[in-house]
Length: 117
Length: 114
Image 1 (tube, rainbow over the protein chains, first blue to last red):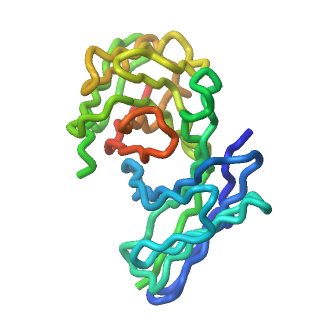
Image 2 (cartoon, rainbow over the protein chains, first blue to last red; image 1 turned 30 degrees about the vertical axis):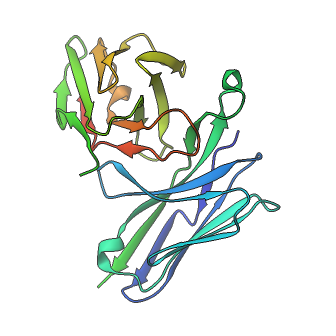
C-alpha cells in the first residue's frame, strides 16, 4: 500500500511556535500532497511536491521530501490559533490502465494540530 | 469556498429510507470523486468519475449507487443503509485524473443512519 502515515497523531502547541508533522509512505511516488481539514469540513489542498523536488515553500508552510527515506514533513512556522485543524498527506496509487500517469489519492489518518492562543 | 458544493450538509435517515446526496462543482473540472470519512479511519475513496464515466469502484457495497449525469454534477443514492455507514461523505473534483492535479473538496454531508 502507498498509504501515507502521519506522525504524530496529535500535536498541541502555543501560538507563535512552529509545528512539524511527518508523513511516511511505502512505495515509490511521483508526487505527494498535503491537505488541511477543519473540524467536520472538507479538505483544502495546501501544497504538492514532486518526487524530483526536495523542498517547497508556500507562505508559512515548508514541505520537504526525502524519497530515499520515503518520508515528507510539513512545517508551519509562527503558528496561529486559526491553524488548528487536521493535516493529511496523500500519495498516489497509479491507475495501471492509464499508463501510470493518472492515479487516485491515498490519504493517511492525519495529524490533529491544536494551536493554543 | 472551494467551488464544490454539497447538499444536504446533514442527513439523518432510517435503515429503510432512500435518500440522495448531491455534489456540484463550478470549476470546469472533468473528474469527480466520492469519499467516506469515518472517525479514526483514513479517508476512503469510494467512486471516481472522469468525463461522466465511472473509472473506479473501490469495492463499495451496492447500497451505495453513484450517478454522474454530467461533468458538473455527482450524486450518491443511498438505500437500506446500515448504522456503520454513518460518516462524513465528501465529494471532490479535479481537472482530470492526472496525479499532478490537486483535488478540491466540498464541505461534506454528515450522514447518520439510525
